[in-house]
Structures are given as structure tokens and as C-alpha cells.
Image (cartoon, rainbow over all chains, first blue to last red; front, top):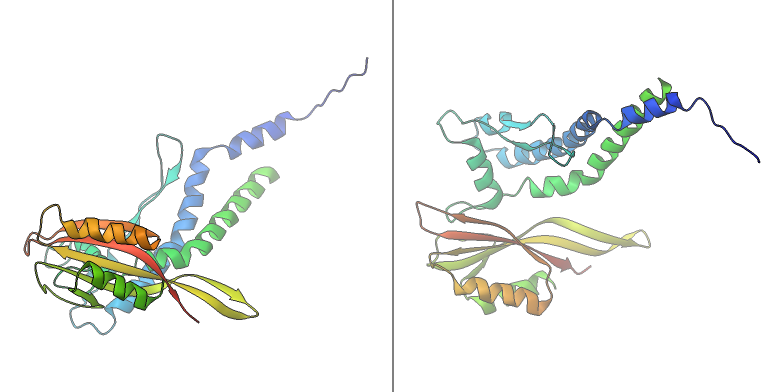
Length: 140
Length: 108
């Protein structure tokens, strides 16, 4: 009876198991979040242009949370506004009113359009990071 | 559905419908505005179809507002893709703000 024996797969097995590390996905998510945050920043700057009330507090409060792994093993991050401005108003409220408007203020959406614009770039950046990580691990 | 169709549809929901801006008009009113391109189709090196994101904001001081039923029914009747983005209550003015995202076609 013919018999086939494959040897030397242990190294490949180790490399493949390294690829399954969910910690690596944090790097991928982080890479994908950058272009989205950049587009949001761009939109916000445009909204604030020429405003006599702009202090820069809202702009500087925009940030990306460190990626985390949820209970299902998926890597996630959040892009948002943290802290308060110099008058003690939560930056997230200011961003929300600018995005959605109110009965006293016209809306100037800058998050939703930015996310849409950055979608393709974000996916590409994540793919690039996956390729880079895979190449590094496979090279050993 | 074009922007003009959306204008007409919203005026059927309430005559207190405004394009781009309006502030505390009545106890209940709608403000709608187009804000960006959602999608497009190109043929023969030209943009042939352009889809716009349009937000429809309802401000109401009524509880369990009928205008919301009417508006959502209208979206469905007209076959418009719609999404309720947020509901916010303004403590200072007592308005409840319903924010919708719909799409319109820009005829080229």
C-alpha cells in the first residue's frame, strides 16, 4: 500500500498559529481607524473655519481609543471626543450638536460623510497591515 | 426620488417643512437638507447617476408624535430607503428631535 508522509510542517504550524493571535488584529484595526479619524478631523476643521467662537478644544479632543478584543474575539476601537472644553462643556455634546443640529443650531454633519469617504481607504489600510504582519511572520 | 419630490413629500406630512434651516418654528416642524454624495454610477467616462444623502430632522414637543408615524409610513409608501439615526430630547426647549437619513437621486 502506498504511504505519504509529510514532514517539516511543525514550523508552518507554529507560524500559522501566530497569525491567529487576536492581538495582531488590534494593529490592523488601529491602521484602519487612522484614515477615518483623519477624514473626521478634516471635516471638523472645515466646519470650524472662520468661526469666531472656535477655540480648538473640540479639535484637540478628537482621538482613537486603544483597540481592544471583545468577548467574541473581535478587535474594536472607537473614534470620539473626550473631555470638556475650557467652559466645562463636554466635547462629545458639542460634536453631537454640530453633527445632528438642534432646534437652535443648524446641523453640519462631519462624522457620517467622513466615515463614508474614508471607508475604502480604511479597508485598504487594514489589508496592507494584514499583508505586512503575515509577511513578517512567514519570514520568521 | 429627486430633491423636489422629497420636498413635496415632506410638505404632505406637514406644511411646516423647511429646506436647510428653521429654528423653533412651531411645536412641530421638519427641516431637511442634502449633505453629501452617497453613491454614483459612471458610464462612458461620465457620472450618470448620483445618489445624495439627505437628512430629515423632525422637531416636536408632542409625546408619541403622530407626525413620526405619518413620516415613516410615507417613506415606505414612496419606497425610500430610510434610517432613524438618532432621537434626542432637548431639555431646555422641550423639543424631541428625530433625525432620519434618506437618499435622493440627483438627475444628471
